[in-house]
Image (tube, rainbow, N blue to C red; front, side, top):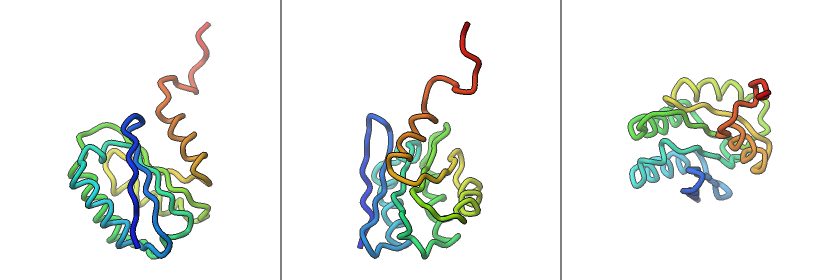
Length: 133
């Protein structure tokens, strides 16, 4: 059982996809190994295709992952999107936002929704600004 990390260097994005039966240990191992080999990934956006597979997530496991991200990051803002329909994810999101420096976390219902969210977040235009007249 493992978690595959797929890198998109053009978008500076990582997709983490767990195999069936993968647990927190596999996710943390993949993150630690990936960041050890590619520390620049700590500044990239991440999508976790969780889809209900990580029922064993713990605060300690996420702290280990956060420590690796925080040690490798060079600065700036990055985003993580978790594909989940867990209605209690907002509590986890708050813990994650506090643990990962310079990284905000969001939920999305699908890979397409996660991609669209990251595109909006990375958009050079401010959608909330008044149109130029």
